[in-house]
Structures are given as structure tokens and as C-alpha cells.
Amino acid sequence: FFGALSQFQRYIVESIFSRAKNPKRVRIGVVDQIIDGDDHCDVPIDPCDKDPYQALCNYKDQVDVYQMEAPLAVGPVFARHFGHRLYRGEYYAMQSDAHVTFTQNWDEDIIMQQESTKDEMAVLSTYLTDIVDSIDEKTGKSLRFTRPIMCQTDYEQGQQGKYLRHGSQPEGIPSIHGSPQLQPYWAAGFSFSRGHFVVNVPYDLYQPMIFQGEEMSIGIRGFTIGYDYFAPERSVCFHTYAVGPNAAKRGQVKHFWENGARYKGVGIRAMKRVLGIVGMNPEVPVSEWDHTEEDRYGTGKVRDVTKFYETFGIDVVNKKTEHHLCSFVSGGQLHRDFMPLLRKDGMGVDYSKVTYKFKDPKK
Image (tube, rainbow, N blue to C red):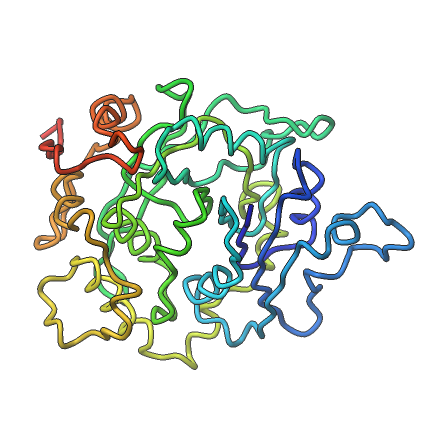
């Protein structure tokens, strides 16, 4: 299958291939955003004649790298657009953040979890748990019995306007066993699906300088096309966050907003498009945002955006959410109520049969 990374260090390549059950079936597409002096992702850590067992020696033909100058980086949406253009029709597709370490036999595990949903439109996605105390370095196996689930979001006011931003997500022992658990939201940090998700919900080329808003754009567009989002039952990779013992190392990483001065005003215009496409800014006249190639980067026809907002308690007019959605999601009630509505052909949950509208139980 295909894995897209918008930026990474070479040790991630080692993790992906050395811990895969079937490394010859894995292909990676990388957008390498570099400055002078950076290591190149397609060059092994040590020369191959010195250490021929490195992933970039054994599997170099399975790593495609698109290299670009970091000062030209205009945010993760733009980078991931290029990353997904490296997709070549693989049966499965994965997206991951940089600074991620995988567990032993991660590929076999995530495919097994994907297939257990019985949902052709399933997308396994989550915010990754911190790497600290998560992997046994001798065996490569996970030490965690918990996993995060995506159910927490709220409006945030930023320089680019008011938008939904996912907050810290709850982590716990899964409430549903034998299958990933249905959730409302998609996360950019980890996503695994059939390959057609990358084709049907491509990253929008016309969203430069966007960071917050990326996940709602992909998530809601995917929902309207018919995709369902699930929290993996088991984590197959963990993230090195800029906290605790890893704070100093991660603090040296460059960010795209360091180039913001040369792209002044671009992000504000892009955010109008982000919100306009998914109907989240009805107060803004449609003439004020860019509609270029909206048929390609717009919403689908399987479900309407209003169905998403009504079902999960989002008021796009007053910019408010019904709080405590996790009380409906994390305990498994969403999964138990909606999964019986999975279409007989496995092509996603039939939301035309969903009448539920979440309301804050603590109001």
C-alpha cells in the first residue's frame, strides 16, 4: 500500500520498513521540505557499503521523494496535495505526520483492523499518542492498551476568522471490541483507508497557508462523499511530540508560518474558500471566495453538509457547538446506533436513515 508523508526524518523510513510484516508491499511518497544543510530523506543514514541492511538501501526503489525548498512551503495542505499526487493506485493508502515511530507488524495489524469494519468507506484516523513509554524497544510492540478517539471540537477565533478546531482528544480502553470504533471526525496526523479515499477527497491545491481548517475540510468533504471515520482499536504508531524529554529536539524543527511575511493575506483568502466549500461561513457572500476547480475539491453528493452539522451538534450560523459530544461517541453509543445502518453492499453508513441530532446532555 501507499503511505504519504509531508515531511519526515530518515529514522521514520527505517521504522516503517524494518517493522513491517510485508515491507516489499509498502511504498512511501514524501514531500521533503528542506533548507541548506538539511539531511535528504532519500539518502541513507550511513553509506550502504557500511550498513547494507538500512531501509533506504534495501527498499530505495519503494520511496518516492518530491523535494522542495522550505521557504516555498505554504502549509501542510499544499505539501500534502503534492504528497497525494505521488499515489499510484495502491489498494490501501495511509497518511502520517512526521516524527512518527511504528510498531512491529504494523502493516498487518492496520489492514486487519480496516477489514474488520466491513465498511468499504471506512477511514481509520486519530491523533497519535506520545511515543514516551509506548513501544517496547526490544520487541517493537506497543505497550499501550488505550487509544485516542476523535470527538472533541469547538470554534476558535484566529487571524483567518472563526473556524472549528479539534482539541485534545480523550484516550481510553476501547468500548467496542473486534473492530475500530465509529467517530465523527477525521485527523490529519494519521489516516488509513482504501486508496480511493486519496482519489475522491484530494487535498485542495488552492488552500495555501492553512493549518487550522485542514481537518474539517477533508473530514466534511469526505463525509459528503460517503466516508465513515473510525478510531483504530489498537495504535500502530506513536508521535514524538515537543514535550518532556523530546521538547528540545522537536523545538529545532522549522515551521511554514516562518515564511508568512512573504504570503501576507493569502491565508485569509484561503480560509474563506475552506469554510465556503463546506458551508461553514454562510454569512460570507459566495462571490467573496475562490471557486476554482470546486467540482474537484468540493463536496460530494452522497450526503449533505447540513446532515453532518445537524447530527453532531454544530451551529454554523452562530458559531457554536453542542458540548460533551464525547459522551455519545467514546462510550460506543454512536457506533452501536449507526453501524446497523451500514449499507448491505458495505458502501458506508446510510445517513438518510439517521434522525439523531446531538444535544449537550449537560445543558
